Length: 84
Image (cartoon, rainbow, N blue to C red; front, side, top):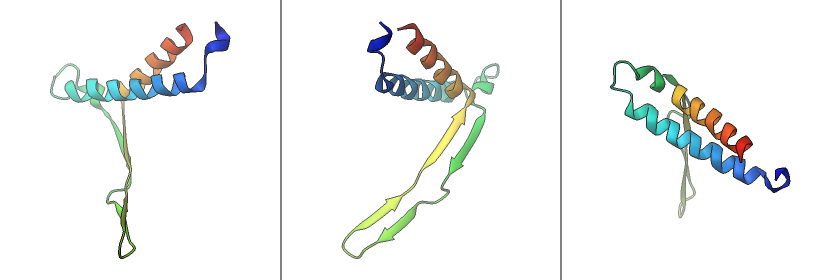
């Protein structure tokens, strides 16, 4: 069954792991024993870059927050990918 695996499945599982890990991290932010799951670092653009072309205005911005729960979600997604 190794031939049926592809990169899109892995990408989808990793994205799901990031989203679910971030959700769990934000839920446990106020809990005294589990607040370490929301510990992490944010990086990206502080303020968005705006490109005004007169008729069209484009706004570019990206901020990524990596937390312990998100990393655990990625690891769990890779384990699930190897298992299926």
